[in-house]
Image (tube, rainbow, N blue to C red):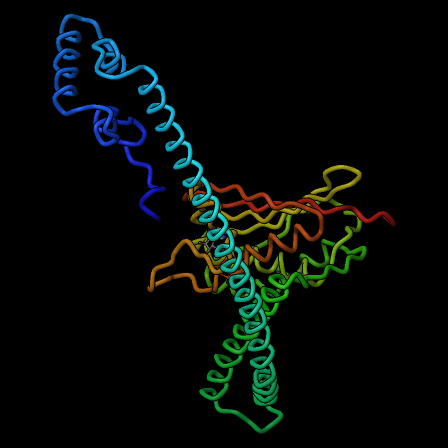
Length: 340
Ligand SMILES: Nc1ncnc2c1ncn2[C@@H]1O[C@H](COP(=O)(O)OP(=O)(O)OP(=O)(O)O)[C@@H](O)[C@H]1O
Ligand SMILES: [Mg+2]
């Protein structure tokens, strides 16, 4: 910043005496005289401005004092205007920098979504081949197997299934980040859909000593949903319930008719729960409450963020209630199909 535009305390509280000396309107001795007089006055309880004191003592003319004060006010105003202009320029520069950074950030987000999408599709093709051959081996179509071989293949099959669901999650995530998550709603039997989800979660639940069942009202009406995406949502919520519930606990899918318009779906577990202050975090993509390197529960932390997107894309809203050490309830209403 140029010297003349910098606002200094001297400029804001002008030292009138020195300024008058500089301008040749006052001598140092006269200034000293006035200052001594001013100090005396102050100690007697009469505070006087220096300019006024100089005029009172006849050391300068009032017109000279007025002209000097005016000059100083003008200088001050000039300095303020310059400082304002400078500030405006800096704000403009910063705004442009921030806009550029935002633009770069959007570009990067797009690149990331594209990358995840491409890599996920690339991973899927070889995986399909692996799954196909493992299936042929498991069913004995390529010859008889020893017990050890059968066991090894079962483990491989389990792993390829996990890999496949992880890739599906990543594809869903990249679709959601690019705003391509399309929902194709149709009248659907939520009971049948939930039964299929529970059935495929059953094995995992049993291996962990957790029971899973459905508690539903009779004669539930059809709901207006995207059946594929809603199965994914319920399966993910069952997966969470089972994963975060210690052995001996249970996970229940409740299906309750709420009114003429809604069916409430809730997935209730008796698991470890979520601390209230961390409730917000669980909806952030790739966020897991146990972020340690010795994570006990597995997964990528994508589930709930996508579940929320899918439920909201259905025009609904997700509600999570949890008590630490007691369990978690995830609830959302679904619209009853108009044809029902
Ligand atoms: N039912 C639950 N009980 C306790 N904690 C839960 C429950 N559901 C989710 N959480 C917490 O929220 C985090 C995020 O859940 P989310 O489903 O998004 O990810 P994840 O299950 O860890 O991984 P992914 O779903 O990708 O396999 C979990 O890691 C866990 O800490
Ligand atoms: Mg999950």
